[in-house]
Amino acid sequence: MGLASCSAIKLGYNNVDEILYWWIDSYIDLTNVQDTRVREDLDRLHLWHRQRELPVIADTLRALEPVIAQDMSPAQACAYVPAIRERVNAVLDRAEPAITTFAIGIAPDQFTHLQGKFERVNRDYENDWIQKDAASRKEKRYEQMLDRGEMVYGRLDDAQKALLRASIDKSIFDPVRALAERKRRQQDVLQTLRRAATQPVNLEAARLQVRGYLRRLQASPDASWRAYEQGLINESCAMLSALHNSTNAAQRESAVRRLRAWQRDLRELAAQ
Image 1 (cartoon, one colour):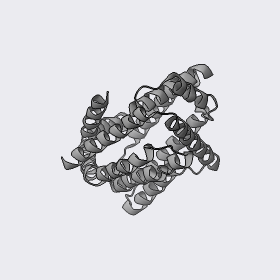
Image 2 (cartoon, rainbow, N blue to C red):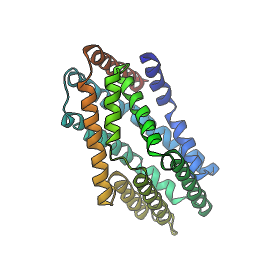
Image 3 (cartoon, rainbow, N blue to C red):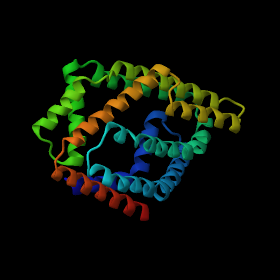
Image 4 (cartoon, helix red, strand yellow):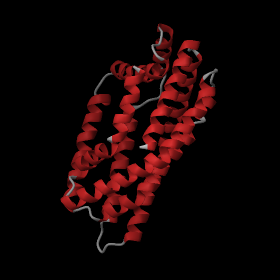
């Protein structure tokens, strides 16, 4: 299982620029000119991330090794959230100039395509989460958490599985609220891109529009959503802490081996 997971990391990362290209194309329906520029920009971003970010992530994983060898408090689990956000922000900041240049060239019919794509993915989300009953939603979340836990610790026992179920039972997760925030962000990006694409072309004005959107992407202007999001983070940290503290020596050793395998993969990818 470990070897397969590590190989998947390498395979997925080596193809991430191609995956992102097809994801962007599905939302915008790229023209031939945009196609070439997007591929070039993604190649440059991918190379920068490989050389600059992968070693930083590997170092963070290495620092985790002594932490997971002993019990972990919810505060210790949450202590790594800022580091994760910092890495995400670094990618967004690096991508900002390319996003700005791309935004200026979006045509009216592509906005129509983008709106239609948003409507389709929203329907999919509703079918996956909102149209299901509470028991089905909880079961889906449980399967997700179980997969993630066993990816790190190996097979979980019945008591540990019950712990995950109990955490999910009392979770504040609300798919209706998540969909509302998703729709807010979609309208935000549509408005931002339309303003950036307004003629005559003004690169500096477009850059400010894109930068503002990226900031709002990182921190929603909706204070109630930010509080809800922080609540989800806090309960995830508590769940991780409780699960980790329930593990035995063999499971913790499995977690350390997994961290080291991920580090090795990341450093090998960075060296390519």
